[in-house]
Amino acid sequence: MVYQVYKSKIVLFLSVFLVLLGSASGWAKKRKKVKKRTYIKAIVITDGAAVYKQPSFDAPILDYFEMNKKIRIKKKMVPGIGGLGSFYRVRLKKGVYGYITDVDIKILSPKGKVKARRDSPAEKEDVVGPMEGVFFRRFAGLSYAYENYAEKVLEKKEQEGISFVGVKFSGPDTFGIAFPLDIEFLYAGKAPQFYLKAADTGKSVSGFIFITNVAVNLPAWEAGRRGLIYYGIGATGIYTNFQVPKGGVVLDSQEIRLGGFLDVGAAYEFYPRWLFRLESKYIFEVNSYPSFLAAIQYQY
Image 1 (tube, rainbow, N blue to C red):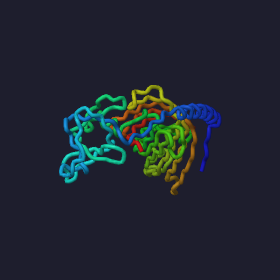
Image 2: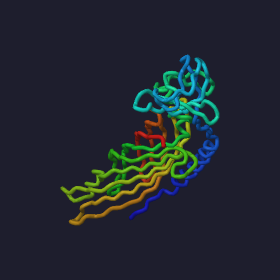
Image 3: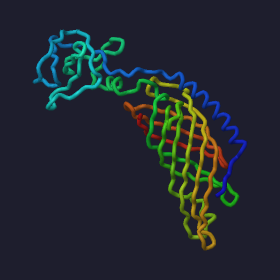
Image 4: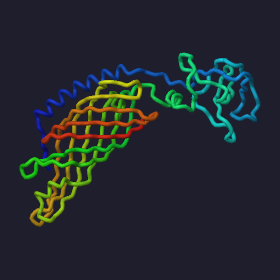
């Protein structure tokens, strides 16, 4: 197994990496704490709206609300017993609760303004959508990367476009680390075809490439709570395992290389909790080459 490390590049990248790590830690400390609301404000829009003992139109009626009465309801809507209607749990007085149908109320924002109906996209965002920007939330998902992968074969630099699939984790508290990080694992189940130059004529090569990337990113621009453009720096570890037929035997070629990269990317939450991410990297290791990545992630 051969270990190739460009010491000067590694020292430079580690220095900048630690500086950005400190910056990201500072951002994490400024992270806005949002109190999770169990009950939300609403206003009655039907005069004489009935409050039922259970979420059912056949249940005993506990009270009637007049129009424009402001009430507190539980954030989660429940289906009616038997599948008829939808209800919210409402507080009548201390220790006493009932159920009011969704058509008799309007959700209010924390400032007391009437919000869109709960089943509309705007209301869904308020209930299950982001309370913080993309940068300060944690996502995980599948990724696809395309790299103009480069290696030295027979003392000559060779390059080939290779596709990778993998998983990508983003945000604070990833693997127990408080500040926001991007961690990805990529796999390509093939050997670059330029290895054929080192193999016996007419023989094929096989193997795989496994890559681990860890990046510290900082927000360059945030589009509300849904969009983000970011930049950063990271460290990469590359493990290759190729089988090359040569001289009547199969040579087992294994190698570990370390390096760094610069990246820039954009992320957008296209549906509550679902994020689409595009990213471009320029990788510096024994060889230098670009990489492009797309990922779909889910907030967890």
